[in-house]
Length: 293
Image 1 (cartoon, one colour):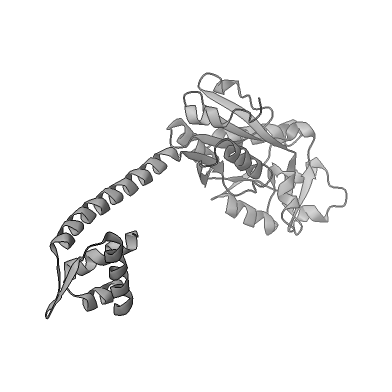
Image 2 (cartoon, rainbow, N blue to C red):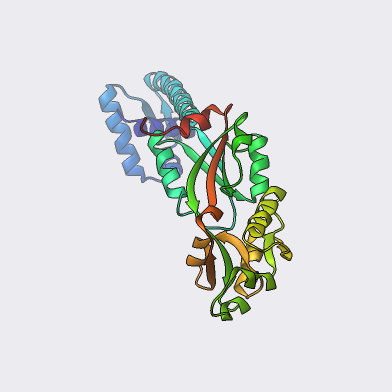
């Protein structure tokens, strides 16, 4: 006895007509009649009785239909409970990552480590400005923050409420375009950048990053640097590509964009990609522990 046969039988019982039931089920009438005969032979009882106006249920058929409807109701309820259980078991891990720059040097490894710990983990990635992501972590709208920080930026301020882990260190550079006046200078020096504005993204909502960038520039001799703001990182990159200004970014940005060039800075002026999460977030704490301890 197959579930399909039971559904066929109940459809005929509801409609009282084999031809109409066959149309409803999108099967041929002979095929439907054959399945009902097989079902009756297996049960050992006649379930349907033909009449000039269609078919009616025999007493055995009425009892069988009643029991089958109960079975199908129980099966549907069981399926819903199983689906609900599976949904509960699949945990969602929300990651907020900085927008506008490549993430291939750390995100594949992070995803692989998370999947290794929980193959059923549902990962949601949201890419927004640094300031928006920091606010989202504070308000518990994400579980893990992928942040950008300078090596000189202390992480001790996170110790009371947050944990952090450096995912990758990127060498810092002054990024400019191949069509920029800077590209025409044969022996480019730090002081040459004073002729061009420093470009910053205005949607960072993160004045600490801005002040850190200016501190970095002052430490290498650009003390009175003119600053211009782009609406967002995409606009900043467009301005750079067109030859306007320069930006303090990772050297890899130029390596991944053929229109740009990089003036590498000493290693201490690099940028750290850092994962940050709350002590109180049990899911984040469990997922960010080393896979092999």
